[in-house]
Amino acid sequence: RKEVEQDPGPFNVPEGATVAFNCTYSNSASQSFFWYRQDCRKEPKLLMSVYSSGNEDGRFTAQLNRASQYISLLIRDSKLSDSATYLCVVIHSGGYNKLIFGAGTRLAVHP
Amino acid sequence: GAVVSQHPSRVICKSGTSVKIECRSLDFQATTMFWYRQFPKQSLMLMATSNEGSKATYEQGVEKDKFLINHASLTLSTLTVTSAHPEDSSFYICSARERSSGVGEQFFGPGTRLTVL
Image (cartoon, rainbow over all chains, first blue to last red; front, side, top):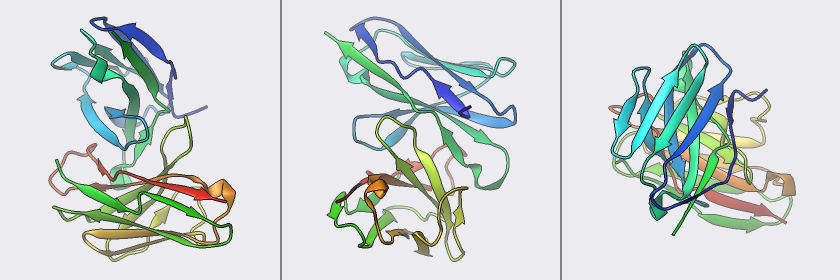
């Protein structure tokens, strides 16, 4: 079983739509959680951290459910520029804080 | 944000040759750099963690004699793929953590696309 699992998509949505992605992780010792964004054939970039209390950054809202070991990302009022692959990332405790990446969920926003 | 560069961005080589990829932190010192590999439609897989002035720590299943890592300074780490074979063709990405940044924030280089014929 993969440590971090995501629905690969693609999610095809019209501009202005609200879309939600989920991610599950298998290691209960995971300490920190993030969403990264990766454009086609480019490097990943940090989108936002994810906290148990939930956090919001503009049109993006992230939630963490430790009991169920899942993380979510909600995008409101989708823009064409939101089209990308969204990577769920967790960090285990201990040594070097290695990032464990999910395979990503692809989002395509169309006019 | 901090800037990380990689060189070359793309390389095509014959089977059996060695390829060196450079990763530089341009405006900060990176005591730790990470090397990842990403196959099409798959997640980034950590290959090794590179610390300045010490030996790299390799992930399980990654051959340290095939993927040589050198982190000679606080701004430069290199990955050498020795005796490359077609199955080594992949997207290689480095990242670096700035001392003052959060635990989850790594700055990624633009990646190197390696094609082995």
